[in-house]
Length: 382
Ligand SMILES: C[S@@+](CC[C@H](N)C(=O)[O-])C[C@H]1O[C@@H](n2cnc3c(N)ncnc32)[C@H](O)[C@@H]1O
Image 1 (cartoon, rainbow, N blue to C red):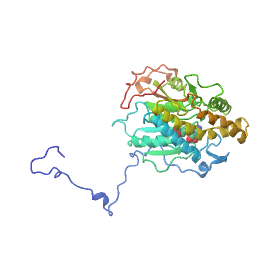
Image 2: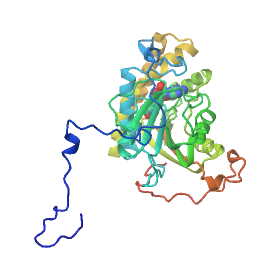
Image 3: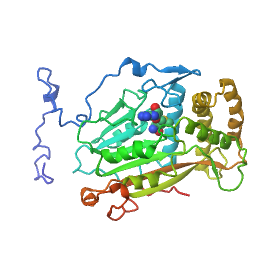
Image 4: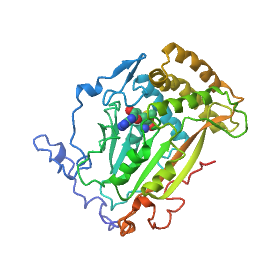
Protein backbone atom coordinates (compact mmCIF):
# COMPACT_ATOMS: atom_id res chain seq x y z
CA UNK A 1 0.00 0.00 0.00
CA UNK A 2 1.24 3.44 -0.77
CA UNK A 3 1.81 5.64 2.20
CA UNK A 4 -0.33 8.54 0.89
CA UNK A 5 -3.94 8.34 -0.34
CA UNK A 6 -6.02 10.89 -2.19
CA UNK A 7 -8.83 12.68 -0.34
CA UNK A 8 -12.01 10.59 -0.52
CA UNK A 9 -10.15 7.38 -1.19
CA UNK A 10 -10.16 4.88 1.60
CA UNK A 11 -6.58 3.98 2.49
CA UNK A 12 -7.45 0.27 2.51
CA UNK A 13 -9.04 0.28 -0.98
CA UNK A 14 -5.86 -1.03 -2.52
CA UNK A 15 -5.81 -4.11 -0.31
CA UNK A 16 -7.01 -7.44 -1.55
CA UNK A 17 -8.32 -9.41 1.40
CA UNK A 18 -7.53 -13.06 1.04
CA UNK A 19 -7.81 -14.39 4.55
CA UNK A 20 -10.59 -16.81 3.66
CA UNK A 21 -8.34 -18.90 1.43
CA UNK A 22 -6.38 -20.75 4.10
CA UNK A 23 -9.54 -21.46 6.10
CA UNK A 24 -11.28 -23.04 3.12
CA UNK A 25 -11.70 -26.64 4.25
CA UNK A 26 -12.00 -28.00 0.71
CA UNK A 27 -8.65 -26.57 -0.25
CA UNK A 28 -5.37 -28.27 0.43
CA UNK A 29 -2.73 -26.86 2.69
CA UNK A 30 0.30 -26.34 0.58
CA UNK A 31 3.35 -28.10 1.93
CA UNK A 32 6.52 -26.13 2.46
CA UNK A 33 9.64 -27.33 0.74
CA UNK A 34 11.21 -29.43 3.49
CA UNK A 35 14.66 -28.47 2.30
CA UNK A 36 13.99 -24.81 2.88
CA UNK A 37 12.27 -24.91 6.29
CA UNK A 38 14.42 -23.93 9.25
CA UNK A 39 13.87 -27.27 10.99
CA UNK A 40 15.20 -29.21 8.04
CA UNK A 41 18.70 -30.13 7.33
CA UNK A 42 20.84 -31.06 10.23
CA UNK A 43 19.18 -34.23 11.31
CA UNK A 44 16.46 -36.52 10.32
CA UNK A 45 14.46 -37.23 13.42
CA UNK A 46 15.64 -40.38 15.09
CA UNK A 47 13.40 -42.24 17.47
CA UNK A 48 14.53 -42.75 21.00
CA UNK A 49 15.18 -46.37 21.60
CA UNK A 50 13.77 -47.65 24.85
CA UNK A 51 17.19 -48.33 26.29
CA UNK A 52 18.13 -44.65 26.17
CA UNK A 53 15.29 -43.77 28.55
CA UNK A 54 15.78 -46.86 30.68
CA UNK A 55 17.64 -45.00 33.42
CA UNK A 56 19.91 -46.77 35.88
CA UNK A 57 18.77 -46.53 39.49
CA UNK A 58 21.30 -46.26 42.29
CA UNK A 59 21.41 -44.54 45.69
CA UNK A 60 17.71 -43.70 45.32
CA UNK A 61 18.54 -41.56 42.24
CA UNK A 62 18.45 -42.22 38.47
CA UNK A 63 21.39 -41.86 36.07
CA UNK A 64 21.71 -41.70 32.29
CA UNK A 65 21.39 -44.94 30.33
CA UNK A 66 23.13 -44.05 27.06
CA UNK A 67 26.85 -44.82 27.48
CA UNK A 68 25.95 -45.57 31.09
CA UNK A 69 28.51 -44.78 33.76
CA UNK A 70 30.18 -41.95 31.88
CA UNK A 71 28.58 -39.10 33.88
CA UNK A 72 28.12 -39.35 37.64
CA UNK A 73 25.46 -36.75 38.46
CA UNK A 74 21.79 -37.84 38.45
CA UNK A 75 19.13 -37.07 35.84
CA UNK A 76 15.96 -37.41 37.96
CA UNK A 77 13.26 -34.84 38.66
CA UNK A 78 15.03 -33.50 41.75
CA UNK A 79 18.23 -32.81 39.80
CA UNK A 80 16.38 -31.44 36.78
CA UNK A 81 14.42 -29.05 38.94
CA UNK A 82 17.66 -27.92 40.58
CA UNK A 83 19.22 -27.42 37.13
CA UNK A 84 16.24 -25.32 36.05
CA UNK A 85 16.58 -23.16 39.16
CA UNK A 86 20.29 -22.84 38.47
CA UNK A 87 19.45 -21.63 34.96
CA UNK A 88 17.23 -18.87 36.38
CA UNK A 89 19.94 -17.81 38.84
CA UNK A 90 22.56 -17.58 36.10
CA UNK A 91 20.17 -15.55 33.98
CA UNK A 92 19.84 -13.10 36.84
CA UNK A 93 23.62 -13.01 37.29
CA UNK A 94 24.10 -12.31 33.56
CA UNK A 95 21.45 -9.58 33.51
CA UNK A 96 19.13 -11.68 31.32
CA UNK A 97 21.72 -12.13 28.57
CA UNK A 98 21.79 -15.59 27.00
CA UNK A 99 25.24 -14.99 25.54
CA UNK A 100 27.89 -12.30 25.52
CA UNK A 101 29.51 -13.01 22.15
CA UNK A 102 28.50 -10.78 19.24
CA UNK A 103 26.30 -13.42 17.64
CA UNK A 104 23.88 -11.22 15.77
CA UNK A 105 22.43 -13.03 12.78
CA UNK A 106 21.43 -10.52 10.15
CA UNK A 107 19.18 -10.84 7.15
CA UNK A 108 22.04 -12.30 5.12
CA UNK A 109 22.43 -15.28 7.46
CA UNK A 110 19.83 -17.77 6.31
CA UNK A 111 18.67 -19.91 9.21
CA UNK A 112 21.71 -19.65 11.48
CA UNK A 113 22.53 -22.86 13.32
CA UNK A 114 23.06 -22.99 17.06
CA UNK A 115 24.27 -26.02 19.01
CA UNK A 116 24.01 -26.48 22.78
CA UNK A 117 26.34 -29.24 23.95
CA UNK A 118 25.24 -31.12 27.12
CA UNK A 119 22.00 -29.15 27.06
CA UNK A 120 20.50 -30.85 30.17
CA UNK A 121 16.87 -29.79 30.53
CA UNK A 122 17.37 -27.60 27.47
CA UNK A 123 16.29 -24.21 28.84
CA UNK A 124 19.11 -22.28 27.15
CA UNK A 125 18.35 -23.91 23.79
CA UNK A 126 14.63 -23.21 24.18
CA UNK A 127 15.14 -19.56 25.07
CA UNK A 128 17.61 -19.15 22.19
CA UNK A 129 14.94 -20.62 19.90
CA UNK A 130 12.50 -17.99 21.14
CA UNK A 131 15.01 -15.17 20.87
CA UNK A 132 16.14 -16.16 17.37
CA UNK A 133 13.03 -17.59 15.65
CA UNK A 134 14.89 -17.66 12.32
CA UNK A 135 17.60 -19.91 13.78
CA UNK A 136 17.77 -23.68 13.95
CA UNK A 137 18.70 -24.68 17.50
CA UNK A 138 19.93 -28.13 18.44
CA UNK A 139 20.55 -29.38 21.97
CA UNK A 140 22.36 -32.64 22.63
CA UNK A 141 22.79 -34.62 25.83
CA UNK A 142 23.33 -38.12 27.19
CA UNK A 143 19.86 -37.97 28.75
CA UNK A 144 16.54 -37.32 26.98
CA UNK A 145 15.32 -35.08 29.80
CA UNK A 146 14.20 -32.13 27.70
CA UNK A 147 10.55 -31.10 27.41
CA UNK A 148 8.68 -32.04 24.25
CA UNK A 149 6.69 -28.79 24.06
CA UNK A 150 9.33 -26.49 22.61
CA UNK A 151 9.55 -23.79 19.93
CA UNK A 152 9.34 -25.30 16.42
CA UNK A 153 12.94 -24.35 15.62
CA UNK A 154 14.40 -26.27 18.59
CA UNK A 155 15.29 -29.96 18.53
CA UNK A 156 16.98 -32.26 21.00
CA UNK A 157 19.06 -35.36 20.39
CA UNK A 158 20.75 -37.94 22.55
CA UNK A 159 24.47 -37.87 21.89
CA UNK A 160 27.74 -38.44 23.68
CA UNK A 161 29.69 -35.33 22.76
CA UNK A 162 33.03 -37.00 23.50
CA UNK A 163 32.39 -39.19 20.45
CA UNK A 164 32.68 -37.91 16.87
CA UNK A 165 29.82 -35.49 16.15
CA UNK A 166 27.86 -37.19 13.39
CA UNK A 167 26.07 -34.32 11.69
CA UNK A 168 25.38 -34.59 7.99
CA UNK A 169 27.86 -32.53 5.98
CA UNK A 170 29.05 -29.87 5.69
CA UNK A 171 31.14 -30.31 8.81
CA UNK A 172 31.62 -26.62 9.53
CA UNK A 173 27.95 -25.63 9.70
CA UNK A 174 27.25 -23.98 13.07
CA UNK A 175 27.18 -20.25 13.75
CA UNK A 176 27.22 -20.57 17.55
CA UNK A 177 28.11 -23.45 19.87
CA UNK A 178 27.50 -23.23 23.62
CA UNK A 179 28.31 -25.16 26.77
CA UNK A 180 27.15 -24.50 30.32
CA UNK A 181 28.09 -26.16 33.62
CA UNK A 182 29.84 -29.19 32.22
CA UNK A 183 31.92 -29.88 35.32
CA UNK A 184 32.78 -33.60 35.53
CA UNK A 185 31.49 -34.32 31.99
CA UNK A 186 34.77 -34.59 30.06
CA UNK A 187 38.21 -36.09 30.53
CA UNK A 188 39.70 -33.35 28.34
CA UNK A 189 37.43 -30.47 27.39
CA UNK A 190 40.03 -28.90 25.12
CA UNK A 191 40.43 -31.86 22.76
CA UNK A 192 36.96 -33.40 23.17
CA UNK A 193 34.76 -30.30 23.00
CA UNK A 194 36.65 -27.12 22.13
CA UNK A 195 38.50 -28.71 19.19
CA UNK A 196 35.29 -30.39 17.94
CA UNK A 197 33.45 -27.09 18.26
CA UNK A 198 36.18 -25.37 16.23
CA UNK A 199 35.88 -28.01 13.51
CA UNK A 200 32.06 -27.73 13.38
CA UNK A 201 31.79 -23.93 13.39
CA UNK A 202 31.55 -21.94 10.19
CA UNK A 203 34.42 -19.51 9.73
CA UNK A 204 33.43 -16.48 11.81
CA UNK A 205 31.24 -18.58 14.14
CA UNK A 206 31.48 -18.41 17.94
CA UNK A 207 32.03 -20.85 20.78
CA UNK A 208 30.78 -19.58 24.14
CA UNK A 209 31.24 -21.48 27.41
CA UNK A 210 29.56 -20.68 30.75
CA UNK A 211 31.34 -22.75 33.38
CA UNK A 212 31.58 -22.80 37.18
CA UNK A 213 34.47 -24.67 38.81
CA UNK A 214 33.46 -26.32 42.09
CA UNK A 215 36.10 -24.56 44.22
CA UNK A 216 35.01 -21.72 46.54
CA UNK A 217 36.82 -18.35 46.44
CA UNK A 218 37.07 -15.71 49.16
CA UNK A 219 38.65 -12.22 49.01
CA UNK A 220 38.79 -11.18 52.65
CA UNK A 221 40.32 -14.11 54.53
CA UNK A 222 37.04 -15.16 56.17
CA UNK A 223 37.15 -18.69 54.69
CA UNK A 224 39.09 -21.03 57.03
CA UNK A 225 41.13 -23.91 55.58
CA UNK A 226 38.64 -26.40 57.05
CA UNK A 227 35.57 -24.68 55.54
CA UNK A 228 33.11 -27.46 54.70
CA UNK A 229 32.54 -26.64 51.03
CA UNK A 230 36.28 -26.10 50.49
CA UNK A 231 37.10 -29.56 51.83
CA UNK A 232 34.24 -31.04 49.82
CA UNK A 233 35.45 -29.35 46.60
CA UNK A 234 39.01 -30.59 47.19
CA UNK A 235 37.67 -34.11 47.59
CA UNK A 236 35.47 -33.70 44.51
CA UNK A 237 38.49 -32.62 42.42
CA UNK A 238 40.48 -35.59 43.70
CA UNK A 239 37.63 -38.03 43.04
CA UNK A 240 36.84 -36.61 39.61
CA UNK A 241 40.49 -37.07 38.66
CA UNK A 242 40.21 -40.73 39.72
CA UNK A 243 37.14 -40.96 37.49
CA UNK A 244 39.08 -39.26 34.67
CA UNK A 245 36.75 -36.27 34.67
CA UNK A 246 37.71 -32.57 34.79
CA UNK A 247 36.15 -30.54 37.59
CA UNK A 248 38.23 -27.37 37.34
CA UNK A 249 36.59 -26.10 34.17
CA UNK A 250 36.79 -22.31 33.88
CA UNK A 251 40.25 -20.88 34.58
CA UNK A 252 41.82 -22.56 31.51
CA UNK A 253 39.00 -22.01 29.02
CA UNK A 254 40.55 -18.88 27.47
CA UNK A 255 43.93 -20.55 26.98
CA UNK A 256 42.33 -23.73 25.62
CA UNK A 257 40.32 -21.75 23.06
CA UNK A 258 43.36 -19.76 21.96
CA UNK A 259 45.49 -22.91 21.66
CA UNK A 260 42.83 -24.54 19.46
CA UNK A 261 42.82 -21.51 17.14
CA UNK A 262 39.97 -19.26 18.28
CA UNK A 263 40.65 -15.54 18.04
CA UNK A 264 39.29 -12.49 19.87
CA UNK A 265 38.85 -14.70 22.94
CA UNK A 266 37.21 -12.83 25.80
CA UNK A 267 36.77 -13.89 29.42
CA UNK A 268 34.22 -12.38 31.81
CA UNK A 269 34.04 -13.60 35.40
CA UNK A 270 30.98 -13.15 37.60
CA UNK A 271 30.93 -13.80 41.34
CA UNK A 272 28.11 -15.85 42.85
CA UNK A 273 27.97 -15.61 46.66
CA UNK A 274 27.32 -18.77 48.67
CA UNK A 275 24.50 -17.26 50.73
CA UNK A 276 23.02 -13.91 51.70
CA UNK A 277 26.32 -12.51 53.09
CA UNK A 278 26.72 -9.56 50.64
CA UNK A 279 25.30 -6.15 51.47
CA UNK A 280 24.24 -5.45 47.89
CA UNK A 281 20.59 -6.46 47.54
CA UNK A 282 20.93 -8.18 44.16
CA UNK A 283 23.98 -10.16 45.25
CA UNK A 284 22.26 -10.99 48.55
CA UNK A 285 19.26 -12.42 46.76
CA UNK A 286 21.44 -14.27 44.20
CA UNK A 287 23.44 -15.67 47.15
CA UNK A 288 20.33 -16.88 48.95
CA UNK A 289 19.13 -18.66 45.82
CA UNK A 290 22.59 -20.12 45.17
CA UNK A 291 22.72 -21.46 48.74
CA UNK A 292 19.40 -23.25 48.19
CA UNK A 293 20.67 -24.63 44.88
CA UNK A 294 23.90 -26.00 46.37
CA UNK A 295 21.99 -27.51 49.31
CA UNK A 296 19.63 -29.19 46.85
CA UNK A 297 22.42 -30.44 44.61
CA UNK A 298 25.30 -31.54 46.79
CA UNK A 299 24.05 -35.02 47.58
CA UNK A 300 23.53 -35.76 43.87
CA UNK A 301 26.99 -34.41 43.00
CA UNK A 302 28.58 -36.67 45.61
CA UNK A 303 26.85 -40.05 45.89
CA UNK A 304 27.97 -41.88 42.77
CA UNK A 305 31.51 -40.46 42.54
CA UNK A 306 32.44 -40.84 46.22
CA UNK A 307 30.90 -44.28 46.57
CA UNK A 308 32.49 -45.66 43.39
CA UNK A 309 35.91 -44.06 43.59
CA UNK A 310 36.44 -43.57 47.35
CA UNK A 311 34.64 -46.74 48.41
CA UNK A 312 32.41 -44.81 50.81
CA UNK A 313 29.00 -46.04 51.88
CA UNK A 314 25.93 -43.90 51.35
CA UNK A 315 25.72 -43.42 55.14
CA UNK A 316 29.34 -42.23 55.34
CA UNK A 317 28.74 -39.81 52.49
CA UNK A 318 25.55 -38.37 53.99
CA UNK A 319 27.26 -37.93 57.38
CA UNK A 320 30.18 -36.09 55.74
CA UNK A 321 27.74 -33.79 53.95
CA UNK A 322 26.28 -32.47 57.22
CA UNK A 323 29.31 -30.22 57.71
CA UNK A 324 29.30 -29.21 54.03
CA UNK A 325 25.67 -28.12 54.26
CA UNK A 326 26.36 -26.29 57.52
CA UNK A 327 29.18 -24.36 55.87
CA UNK A 328 26.74 -23.05 53.25
CA UNK A 329 24.65 -21.46 56.00
CA UNK A 330 27.59 -19.62 57.60
CA UNK A 331 27.33 -15.94 56.68
CA UNK A 332 30.57 -15.10 58.45
CA UNK A 333 32.43 -16.82 55.63
CA UNK A 334 32.36 -14.64 52.51
CA UNK A 335 32.73 -17.42 49.98
CA UNK A 336 31.67 -17.30 46.36
CA UNK A 337 31.79 -19.31 43.15
CA UNK A 338 33.18 -17.96 39.90
CA UNK A 339 31.08 -18.12 36.74
CA UNK A 340 33.46 -18.02 33.77
CA UNK A 341 31.89 -16.78 30.55
CA UNK A 342 34.46 -17.25 27.79
CA UNK A 343 33.87 -16.87 24.09
CA UNK A 344 36.02 -16.93 20.97
CA UNK A 345 35.60 -16.62 17.23
CA UNK A 346 36.70 -19.10 14.61
CA UNK A 347 38.79 -17.09 12.14
CA UNK A 348 37.14 -16.20 8.85
CA UNK A 349 38.19 -17.88 5.61
CA UNK A 350 40.57 -15.07 4.68
CA UNK A 351 42.16 -15.10 8.10
CA UNK A 352 42.88 -18.81 7.92
CA UNK A 353 44.45 -18.64 4.43
CA UNK A 354 48.09 -19.56 4.46
CA UNK A 355 48.07 -20.37 8.12
CA UNK A 356 48.97 -24.02 8.16
CA UNK A 357 48.83 -24.36 11.87
CA UNK A 358 45.77 -22.54 13.08
CA UNK A 359 46.24 -24.46 16.29
CA UNK A 360 49.66 -22.95 16.65
CA UNK A 361 48.07 -19.62 17.47
CA UNK A 362 49.61 -17.85 14.45
CA UNK A 363 46.33 -16.52 13.12
CA UNK A 364 46.26 -12.82 12.26
CA UNK A 365 42.80 -11.73 13.33
CA UNK A 366 40.83 -8.59 12.56
CA UNK A 367 40.39 -6.01 15.30
CA UNK A 368 38.44 -7.18 18.35
CA UNK A 369 34.68 -6.74 18.21
CA UNK A 370 33.44 -3.50 19.71
CA UNK A 371 32.83 -3.45 23.45
CA UNK A 372 29.10 -3.32 22.87
CA UNK A 373 27.43 -5.09 19.98
CA UNK A 374 23.72 -4.71 20.36
CA UNK A 375 23.59 -6.23 23.81
CA UNK A 376 24.54 -4.37 26.94
CA UNK A 377 28.23 -4.59 27.77
CA UNK A 378 29.01 -6.91 30.62
CA UNK A 379 28.95 -5.65 34.16
CA UNK A 380 30.70 -8.79 35.37
CA UNK A 381 34.31 -9.28 36.23
CA UNK A 382 36.29 -9.06 39.36
C1 LIG B 1 25.18 -30.05 35.09
S1 LIG B 1 24.31 -30.51 33.67
C2 LIG B 1 24.20 -28.98 32.80
C3 LIG B 1 23.11 -28.97 31.80
C4 LIG B 1 22.84 -27.65 31.10
N1 LIG B 1 23.93 -27.27 30.24
C5 LIG B 1 22.53 -26.57 32.10
O1 LIG B 1 23.21 -25.56 32.13
O2 LIG B 1 21.55 -26.75 32.84
C6 LIG B 1 25.47 -31.41 32.70
C7 LIG B 1 24.83 -32.15 31.54
O3 LIG B 1 25.88 -32.74 30.77
C8 LIG B 1 25.40 -33.95 30.24
N2 LIG B 1 26.56 -34.76 29.83
C9 LIG B 1 27.48 -35.31 30.60
N3 LIG B 1 28.39 -35.97 29.87
C10 LIG B 1 28.02 -35.82 28.57
C11 LIG B 1 28.55 -36.28 27.33
N4 LIG B 1 29.64 -37.05 27.28
N5 LIG B 1 27.91 -35.96 26.19
C12 LIG B 1 26.77 -35.20 26.23
N6 LIG B 1 26.23 -34.73 27.37
C13 LIG B 1 26.84 -35.03 28.54
C14 LIG B 1 24.62 -34.54 31.39
O4 LIG B 1 23.71 -35.53 30.96
C15 LIG B 1 23.94 -33.31 31.98
O5 LIG B 1 22.65 -33.12 31.44
